[in-house]
Amino acid sequence: MSALEVDALIDDPGTRVVVCCGSGGVGKTTTAAAIAVRAAERGRDTVVLTIDPARRLAQALGLAELGNVPREVAVPGFAPKGSLSAMMLDMRRTFDDMVLAHAGPKRAEEVLANPFYRTISSSFSGTQEYMAMEKLGQLAADGTWDLIVVDTPPSRSALDFLDAPRRLSTALDGRMIKLLTGPARAGGWGLRKVVSAGFGLFAKAVSAIVGGQMLADASAFVQAFDGMFGGFRERAQRTYELLRSDGTAFLVVAAPEPDALREASFFVERLAEESVPLAGLVVNRTHPALAKLPAAKALGAADSLAARGDAPLAAAVLRLHADRVALAQRERRLVSRFTKAHPGVALAHVPAMAADVHDLAGLREIGDRLAGA
Ligand SMILES: Nc1ncnc2c1ncn2[C@@H]1O[C@H](COP(=O)(O)OP(=O)(O)OP(=O)(O)O)[C@@H](O)[C@H]1O
Ligand SMILES: [Mg+2]
Image (cartoon, rainbow, N blue to C red; front, side, top):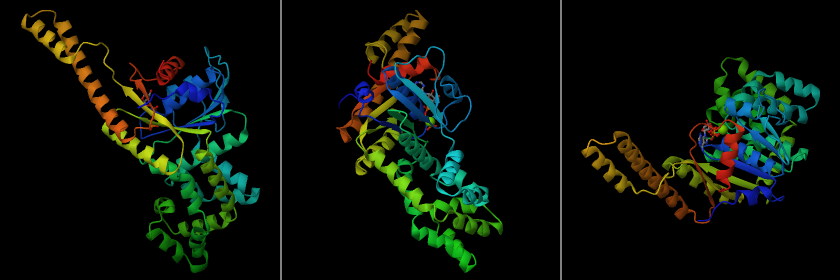
């Protein structure tokens, strides 16, 4: 097992994209923000793309309003050697912008006004994953920043996120278009067949729309959308290639818990299958023992204090310490199970802070721990 060299990673001008992924609630957004702050303070011109950051974290980054473009972080006490811009992903706006970029103005207007589009653009499974990647593609193409740090949506399944570019690309290829444009000619039967066959991409959206208007809207949508598919697919493919390039580093974030580490394993394997460069695993919210005193000794001491009816507070602290030592051991065991299965994966440990991380000081502290400082 080796230590994850976070500073070497973010100082390397060859590192252009850092993607923080992992299962829900493990600290992806926090890690992404902390890395971005650290990189900016160490001299990189950095942009961080966050997804649903906690309100207070957003405020700490000066992201009070939802915009769909990066803004330079200008908050008191922050004067980085490089620079930091931050943005929150607005899924719907990103989708709209994509339509505007690929369709002529008249066609774009039709698409944007279509109820079917309005539903799929905000609810079909994978939209958020795909839009995050679309935005990454845009930020990379923009060329303003030399490091892009990307947070990812809380995909229940690791596959959702990695699959997004390709799934969209496949879904949008000719076969799907034919199936969907069928209904206009065949009186709607084709679409119903698609729906009942359970095509994942549209099924959810379609089932969310009830009423006879549905098929008409869907057909009109597909007709208006037709012709834009090529551009979409090309972009999805480019972003997918960017993810696999040498300048990209994935960080898998996990909690030191069985489920999270199992998902992390799955992620690591999947990234390897896709030849996506993995920088390492961040084990977030660990509980290292705070003192060297062994648990058995602490418990023995607590017992003898209790027997004498002495110093109840000290006895309680000793017992707490024993619990904490047991927890630390359990976490170490879980992590070593992971490293046995994936010996090549570098690790960083970030302890659980006393409170949620929602300000610059907290992000800096997380950054220090990530870097092993
Ligand atoms: N090391 C830590 N110590 C204390 N609190 C932490 C730590 N890491 C993250 N948190 C807190 O845990 C909560 C969840 O973190 P975060 O939002 O980064 O997770 P996430 O993986 O992005 O979640 P989601 O999957 O919902 O997007 C936040 O309130 C954050 O402040
Ligand atoms: Mg998050």
